[in-house]
Image (cartoon, rainbow, N blue to C red):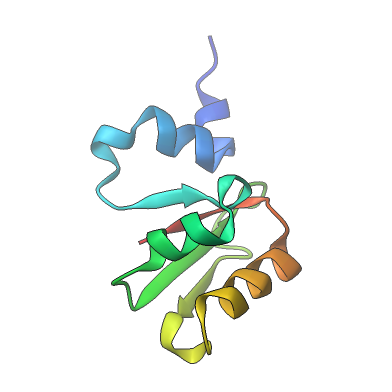
Length: 89
């Protein structure tokens, strides 16, 4: 059995090791606007990480307050990244 798949797929890693992950996370692919709004509620920053890149390539720290509302931030993420990534606290 190879364990490299856990390190190549951030969503699989976060799901498998959620008890040890130490932070809130969600798959962008699974989020509609309402669920996204619940995920970011009370947060100042979130991190976006693409599923298919590594070493921080494509990762983006987002200041939620820089976006006028949740819908604009959601559309920004969907427009830039589609559904291929995870969001972290």
